Length: 320
Image 1 (tube, rainbow, N blue to C red):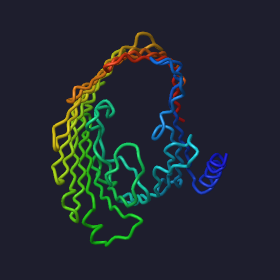
Image 2 (image 1 turned 45 degrees about the horizontal axis):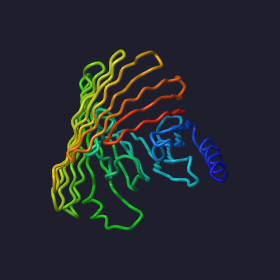
Image 3 (image 1 turned 90 degrees about the vertical axis):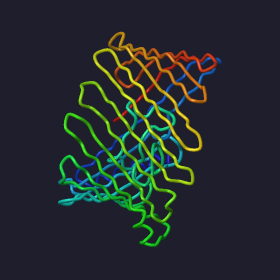
């Protein structure tokens, strides 16, 4: 109840302070009726999926504020990120506990490969998790090119010289009808054994096709190189894709994710997924799902990962 009151109060405050206000809510999970062991359970997707976001800006879109709770269904109010921003004639300045993906790429199927799913964000924040404090400055007048600087200024005091030596540099360039290229470098001249370079290119020049190559190189005590290559395709009733990812550090580990789907009827689809990794672990799963078209689905899974797995469920996925 206290959390609900806090959310309602935040809506009132945000609505009164800004001319343009939006509230975004997402929630997903499944009611699992029975699995291979005969168990029934309610499964929330949890952090990063059950989110509540408030955003506000002035009428001209020159300044604004946003805050996101990463799991509003739990009893605790978990702030994932918040930021205030200002857009001038040449740059956009963002300050706060930032989780920014303007210069970032995921694997072609959405980052389903296990060893390396996507490049890092500014300040090294990747995937679900709290943002980090600092300031980002992005260009706004270079057309298809976006340049960015990230200053990781934390709540704990640090010498400005050290902050300057850890300033991150990023760029994203969009080629019309071809794709997008990104590079993000964390030079860290203070601790020179923690220099990280992220690069990537995604091709979207063919209808229905997304092909992506991404990589990350960490200069540490032991060099750490990660890469991911994959493609995703969808046309008419057919979908399919794969990702191959690998990490080369003390050892070379790799994994493959692949899937294929077919729309049997307008509401009925079947999807076959498979994974295999260098440690010889594997999984195969067939999903048949009926989509009611309003965020509610019902379906069944049958799979094998050394043992037979199966379940019947009703799923929900709401995004408002």
